[in-house]
Amino acid sequence: MADTTMQRTVDAEFDIDSWDEVPYDEPDEGPKLTRVVIRKTYRGALEGTGVADVLTTQGPEGAGYVASERIQATLDGRRGTFVIQHGGLADGADQTTFGTVIPHSGTAELTGLSGHATEARQGVLTLVYSFENHPE
Image (cartoon, rainbow, N blue to C red; front, side, top):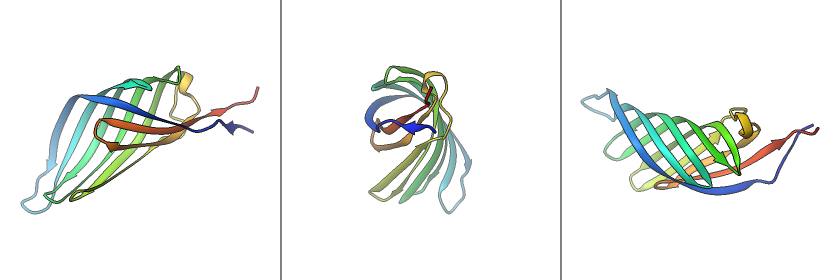
């Protein structure tokens, strides 16, 4: 039976390299809906790049997004890719975010990665994660 190593938490700063947004529903009343492709560069504890496909809802007082993001990076000295599904909601000044590493999405040396991700601060991904150990 596999066990899980101790959980770690890292804050990975990122820059947005490109933001390609295309509206797909702009009604006379109600929020606008868009598709966005965001390309990021991560630095620090998570070193690499990410590409997120995002669906957004943008209104004058409320907004939200859901995204699937493939990250190609080095984490804990391990290199590979993994996918985070994340999202967020804004109700005026109140904002919340949520995210999860898609189970079994890790490749190469990131195989066995699991965890949660949030973007509670602008330009910072907080990743709480662990690696599954496979006994020999």
